[in-house]
Structures are given as C-alpha cells and as structure tokens.
Image (cartoon, rainbow over all chains, first blue to last red; front, top):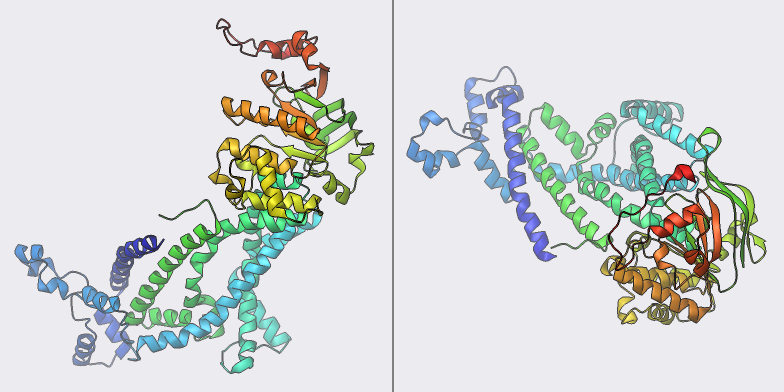
Length: 334
Length: 273
C-alpha cells in the first residue's frame, strides 16, 4: 500500500511538469512579457520602467528554451547554463520547493492570497458538494424505489428540465427572487462575520445544488437501477429481504463504489472554488483570484494556481484509487 | 405442498405481450423432488421464480390461475406474507454463483442476513453460519466465513448459495440450473450434495434444468416443459425409459452417452411439434 502511494506520487511528477510546460507555452503564445508589462504598468510607462519590471520578475529571461541560434552544438548537448537560465526552469525550481512567489501586479505574497481565498471558496463549494451529493442520492434512491411509476416519470421530466437550464439563468433568477423579491438574502457580496456569513452563503450554495441536481439524479438513478438488475439483488429478494433494505444495503453499497470514482477526484478541487459563482456573487475565493489573474494578466498567480490545481487533481486521483480499494473488497493495490 | 393450477404468465401487455407460461399445472408433495426439464425459454425458470412472485412486475403479469402453497394462494398474498415465504418456506439456488452472491459483502454477512430474517430464535449467529457452511461440505467453515465471494472457487460459491438457501430450513428448495455454470466434476459433487441434504432435511425440491442427464438419480418425478406448458409428466424412470411426447423423445436422444459411437446429435424440428 505504502509502496503504491510512493509510486503514484513519483508518477505524478512528470505530469505536473507537463501541465506547467503547457501552461507556460499557452500563456506566452497569447501575449509576450512585454505586452504583459505594458498592460500592468499602463500606457504611460517608459521603456525603462518596463525593462526594470520585466527584469525584477525574471521575464527578461528566455521563456522555455533559449533561441537555438545563440547556442553551439556542444552547449546543446551539455544542457548549457543558458538552458537552466530560462524562465520556465527558474520558476519550476522555485515552485518545486512550494515557494509560490508573489503577485506580478500587487507584489503581495501568493501564499497569503491563496490562504485568504481558500476559505470563502471552501465555504461555498464544500457544503454545496456534500448537500448536492446527499440530496441527489436520496432522490435517485427514491426514484429507483418507485421506478416506472407516474411519479418516477415526472421526476425524470423535472430532472431533464433542471438540466436544460443554464447556470446563468439560475444565478440571475436566484438573485432576483431571493434578494429582490424575498428581500432577505444579499444579491451580491461577501462578508465574513460569524453566523451572519451564512446569509451570503445560502444563495450561492443553493444555486450550485439545484443547478447540478438534475444531471446527478439522472446519473445516480441509472447507476442504482443497473444494480437492481444484478443477480445478487434477485438472491437478496429470494431470501425475503424487504425492498427498502435491498435498496439501502445491497444496491447502495455497490452503487456507492461506482460513485466514488466520479466523486472523490473532485474533492480536493473544491478548494479552487467555483469560477462562475464566485464571479457573479463577488465572493473573494480562489475562483475569483484565478479569474482576475487571467484578466490582469498576472502570470505569477496563473502559474501558481495551475501548479497547485494540478497537484490537487493528481492527489484526488490517488485518493480515488485508495478509496476504491478500501470500499471494494475485490480490489487490491500493488 | 405446492399446487400450480392453470397458471399463465405474460410479459408485457397489448401487442408486445409474450406468453412465457401457458395454463400450466404442476404439484409437488412434501419431501418430493420434481425436475422441470426443457429448453431455454420454455418457461421453467419463470415457473420457479413465480412460486414466490420474484418476477419483476411489470413486465410480468400473472394472467390466470393460482399457485397454492399449503393451500394459500401466492398470487393473493401481501408483501409481508411473501417475504416470510421467500427464504423461509421456499428458498432458491440460482445458476451463476459468481454473480448471485453480492461481491461487496462477506459470505457471513449474506448468510446471517437470511438467518436474522427468518429465525429470530437463533441466539448465536456465528455458530449458526458455521454449521450451515459445514453442512454443505465447506472445509474450515469458521476460517472461511469471513471471506468475500471472489475469494472462493465456483464450486464453493455454489455451496455457499446452498448453505444460504438452507439456512432457514425451507420446505422447498428451488434449484434453478444449479450446476450449469460449473464444470462436470463439480457438477457431480454439487448434485450429490443436494441429494444428501435433501435426505437429511426431508425438504422438497424443484430441480430446474435443461439437462436430462443429471436428473436420473435425484428426481422422483419429472415434468417436461415446452413453450410454456408441461407436455409430459411422470415418474423419472418411466419418462426416461419410455418417453411419450415427441419433444421428450428428442430431448432424451440428445444426451451424449459414454462409449457410444460418435454421431450427430439430432436437432429438434419445432415445426413438427
């Protein structure tokens, strides 16, 4: 088990490396460091201030590979000093020690930015995830229990209706209804202050749950229904087990094993927040941080977010496999 | 003990309706073993499952007849009575032991589930599970009872299925193709086990199979099913020696026999029947 984890972690290193390489490539294909500096510093910046800005942040270095023309063949083979002197290698060695650096725009240490953004993000996504999961599983089990009845058909209809509405519509409708009609929830904004924080959280959380409900209930219902057709369900019924118990014991456990694959991988990702929701509600979470960093542009934030995000994702995948082995006795990790 | 009278079972309704069982009659006395033989789709398994209404409804529809268990009509029973019947009075062993056991629960959990449901008087579940496994010839039952199904061989899995079925001392065991998924030597062992257990417990048995070859030493009577109804019924010996119906004759001539010259197996011409 321990050896398995170590191996998986080692396998993750080249993946993170590849993700970062792609990020660097894509980001600087769209804009040069020069253009970036000018956008941050404004149109009145002198060439000198631009150069100092670039130099201080290391953007005067070659980005991934130095120009081939400047190198001799021997340099190329020996992986010369100028190779190591690229922005990519420089930043990666720093990131490898989890030194995230600081924002290109504000100069604020990124670790602070992430720390202050993680909590609002988690306050939204974690309750939304857990609540959504429980509500979806509950409805799915109920629809399986009453399968093929008129109510089940109505449920299917409602689920497809819920799925068909885009998230934006939920947000706008939610803001209008909860804030302007009920006049209880704030339509926008976030303020952390004890229990009153709840008021800012309820609407975004409810919207995430409701917008995901249709698809999840449909998926889980199909998943549980497939279990219902298995031979061992017939065996359980032949023993005299009640329908409710068949569902809650035999179907649920087998179904949950399949669910794990889909759910656990997204668990660590919750910390990254919901880009759209945070943006619409002005919640200062990590989703918002990343969103404004791409717009600014603040490459230091983008690179650190992608770095942490890919590590979290890989961590989620490893966690999935461990949970899978824990839940399903047929699976052994070697 | 069991009396099936004029039973018809359909799948679906209206234009899509398929008749799986048509006006079937069959009875099983206490302690008697009745084999139901027939080809795939002849309605044998459907008949077996209908005894405790295990067929999913819909699509199954019981259109005519009655199924009397000790005089009570199963088709008129409520859910609570049906649940008492299932496993308690009539227990099942199915064809494919590897998929018929729940892969994520230990065999102890699955056997004890049956015991808890029907035998509230049992105080030591562990001892009872152990004795059930011992009864079906599993070596070291105490050590094996916390195994998961995938840790057992096919033959052992089927023994576990039998142990689970017998855990509640049923009066009738419905063995639905209990040896079809197993290889020949294991088949013989399982059949021998069933015969022994039947002698020990005195229960009745409904042995559903498509293989005339296995019923010889085990069934008292045989009912041959074809297209949803019983076409021939009689004492096993009589039917095997002197089959009356053309379909039965054709089925029996399909049994390969040891030492016989190699020959083509005769195909059954359904148009003639």
